[in-house]
Image 1 (cartoon, rainbow, N blue to C red):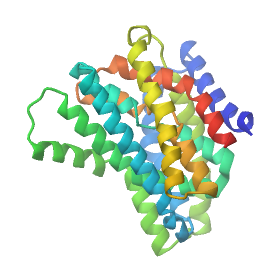
Image 2: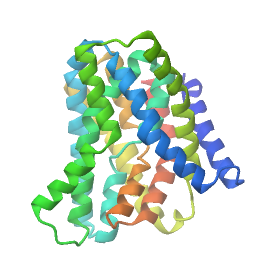
Image 3: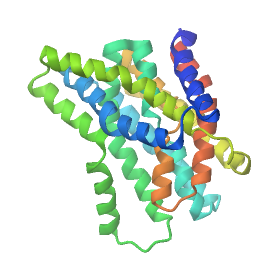
Image 4: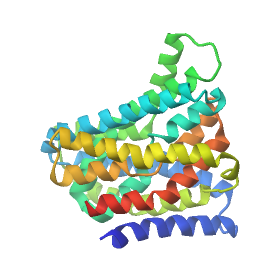
Amino acid sequence: MVLDNLFPVFALILVGNLLKKYNVTTENFLKISDRLVYFIFFPALLFWKIGSAPSNLASQAGLYKAIIASVVSVYILSTTFILLGRLHRFKAGSFSQSCYRFNTYIGVAIVVSAYGEEGIRHFGILIGIIIPIINVLAVTTLTWFSGKKQTALQRAAQTLGALVTNPLILACVGGAIYGQLVNRFPVFIDNTLRLASYVTLPLALLSIGGALTLRSLKENLGLSLIAAGFKLALLPVIGYVYLKWFHVTGLPFKIGMLFFCLPTSTALYVLSSQLDSDTRLASASIALSTMLSFVPLSISLLL
């Protein structure tokens, strides 16, 4: 079970890293690949899966409450660590994101492999709910510690702008609306979206591998390990408690635990760069979290 579902995902990430190392792929190729996945193929996949989902999936309120409560709890704890540990403001935003952001691409790849169509529909709705919340938390922390003087209105506008232009959020919301109104696709549209989905995950995983680098890990090892502890140890434990608290069982429980054990998102590098936070810490955290995530992901699949 574990090897069957995790090995293909991490094997493609490794292939992506080797292709970049031996110059088979280039920086320009990876940038174009990322844009294609982020703006076209991945939103199409989410819209397709959620748009054709049974309407009763939205009834899994306990799962969504547990996810939100867990992420917010870890956000509060990591922010407390930043304040009590007197973390430099330049590193604060990147560190904070590393503790609770999740890699959507790896999540979808594992869910598709392990839990099939029904699993991806649960996961799609879940990320449609949590991505806006995570973006609000991330942008709030980044702007708060950036040192720039911004009014509450300016921060709100910046956060809102990041949300309404996020293609993954738009795809999830659009898919949910379509699912409620129509709930099925014409055969030719269904076949087109299915064909497009075949491109999405391999391309995304190759891009993740190509972007991984260990160059900045040595100088940021301590903070990266602490961030990985929050993301890969504390979040799963807190998440498990909340899932039990809200009486989540069956497939939703499995999806929730898998979500909690995912490595941190590569998107934190982009947001850290845009809002003047430490990109080298972001890069180190992404690499370390991705490598270490095999253990908690394995445990989540065994639960």
